[in-house]
Amino acid sequence: MKNIALILASGKGERSGLNQPKQFYEVGGKTLLEHALTAFENHEAIDEIIVVSHPDFLERTKRLVSGASKVCSVVAGGETRQQSSYNGVFSVGDVEANVLIHDTVRAFVSRDIISACVEGLKEHDAVCAAIETPDTILEIDENGRIAAVPQRKLLRCAQTPQCFRLNLIRQAHNLACRNGVSVTDDCGLILASKLADIYVVAGNTDNQKITYPRDLELAKLIYEKKT
Image 1: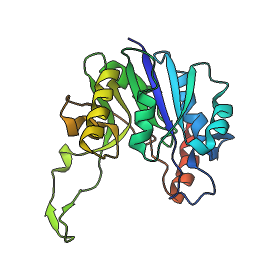
Image 2: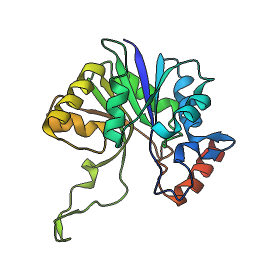
Image 3: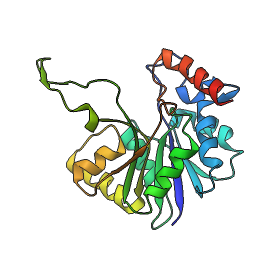
Image 4: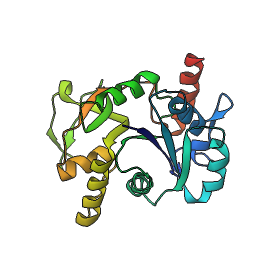
């Protein structure tokens, strides 16, 4: 079955303190978008790549990815991550495929993570990369009081790629639209509709989401470690 990477590069990056979206921030002479794209472009198991761009930066994104042979299309995203994922998922022309949905701002995703996701999809309909949390996580109530302290050994910090059979994630999106479900990632869509179990594979700390100004310095350190 074809493996298609869906790279979400449609955010505005409002929390980063930059004067442009984070995907265009350069580390080592390449944008975060180019770093993320290269990881999937260079992996032999990935057949095609679709990039979802912020509508205001569609042409700029097309120029940046024009040298990648596996990029088959660049599509416009929506107002939210969920809408951007929807646009990307429904732009796939295949009847069925494996779709690996990845956030561009996790620019330093490793070959091992991509391999683990592809292998996981051979036996499971849904796969998510995640890492153990070093911190105790508190659940609070609406009044700001601690309601529960979940067992840390059972908790994971979700990363991307989050990977699915194409028809499964399409069905989850359609149900979310019909039922008014709003989530922050694609695994949330599957869980909301209870369509499938989600298998977890190991991510790593270099697969860091670049969100805040301090993360931009971290991105430089990760890049320097890898080069």
